[in-house]
Length: 188
Image (cartoon, rainbow, N blue to C red; front, side, top):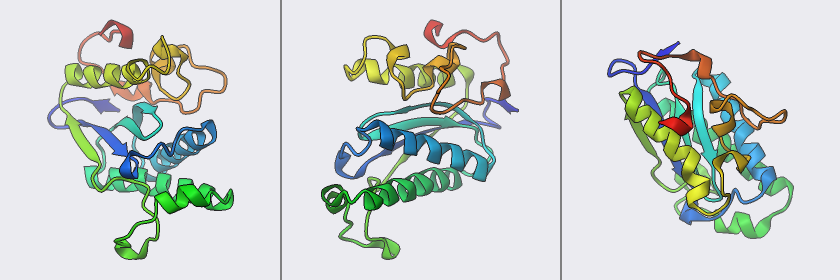
């Protein structure tokens, strides 16, 4: 169970694709990222509370049970491996060429992520809910949909307790221990 406090903050993670390339513009790649996030959650034993996958980045709120660097390594590492493997398997040579890493850090040929992902600790329920709402409004502000609920690659329906039958990634909302009465995401 997660109580959001200074002693047990949650993590707000933003990972941006290399050169802000729209790597995740297809549903197939967004599905791969959702599966990778789920795999990272199970490998690391942490909860996921909110997410959105945009064409060139994603936002994620996780439980802070691991060190932030370990959570980020799991999330970005698994997602990167799965996405690059898919691009190789489907022979997307042009996309792979754009992800070619000139630095070849640690022997890697491709780099999916920009050099520095952001990890922000969330110490209060208020700040936590501000980030949840920011995540859910992201597709609306980008002009992709008129209503947040209409964007398939976000946790907004889970927060509104109306998940789809084929919801791409379920949230661990029942693991949050609220210190004050919970409001719906769209009311905060």
